[in-house]
View 1 (tube, rainbow, N blue to C red):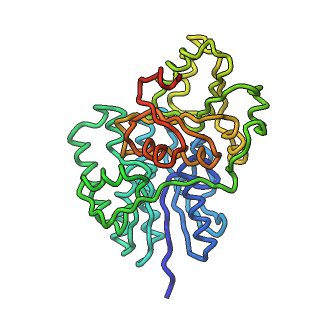
View 2 (cartoon, helix red, strand yellow):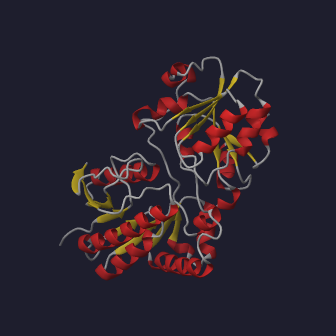
View 3 (tube, rainbow, N blue to C red):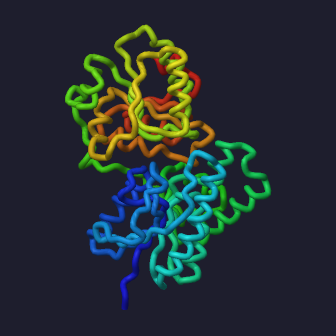
Length: 362
C-alpha cells in the first residue's frame, strides 16, 4: 500500500525568496529529509518577477514540485492581482485533483488568499485530509486595508465559504493566540486549531556584533545608532510614527534609519523623506538570503509595525529573523497585541502606540 503524501499548495516556492516561500521551502525540505513523500503545487512565478516562467515540474531536495500557469498581471493593481489569484485558484485546484489520492494530507497556506476553499473541495473529492496553515486571515485583511472594496454581500459569501473550508479541515494552524481567538469567534472548534509561530533559519542568521557587519561598513555607518527595517513595507504597515520620530531627531547626527526592502509604501516613505530633507535615512533593496544575516546585524535596533486593526489577522514574519540576529525590537502598533506581548514576555523589545512619535524618539 502506497504511503500517504503531504501535498502543499502555495503560490511561491523555492527558488523564490519571499517570506511564505522561505517558510514553506524550509519545512518541505526538512520533511523530505525525514523520508516523507512531499509534493508542492505552486506557480511558475517569483514574487519580484511574475514572468519568471519557472519549470513546470522539477525535484528540489527530494520534493516534487508542480508549477501551474496563471496570469501575470502583478501585485501593484488590485484588479490585476485579483485576476492572478483567481487563475491560480482554478489551476491549483485542477492540479490538486490530479495529484491527490485517498489518505494524502493537503496543506493549504494563504497565498493566494482563500486558497483553502479550492483545496477543501479537492481534498473532499479525492478522500484526502486538509490542513490549513494560515499566515493571515482573509477576506478580513482586505476589508481592513481597503474599506468598501468588497461589497457586503460578496464579503459575507467569501467569509462563509472560507469558514466552511476551515471547518472541514482536520487542523488549522495559526501563528498567534490573537489569530486563534479570531477563528474561535468564527465558530471553528478550538480542538481543530493549533498555534505554531513562524520561525527563521538560525544557521544562516545568528547574533553577530554590528561592527563586523559588511553592510554597516559599506554604508559608512560606523559610530552611528542605526534603526533598521527589513522586508516588505506594505499597506499593513504604518510609517508616520517613525517619520515623526525622525523629525524630532533631525539634528541628532548619531541616528541613522536604514530601510531595507520594498513594498507598496516604500515610494511614499522615500518621497516624504526627500520632501522633508531627512538626511538620516538610507534605503536599499531586498537583500539576497545569503547576506540577510549581515544586513540584520547592521542595525542596533529594528523597527516593526502593524496597523492595530490588523491584530489577530497578520503577524509580521520579519520579527523572527530580527530575534535570531540578536537585536531588540521597537514595535509600533497595538500595545496589547500579539507582537507587543511577545516582546514583553521575552524582554526583547518595547511597544509604542501608533502616533506616539515622542516616545519612539525617546
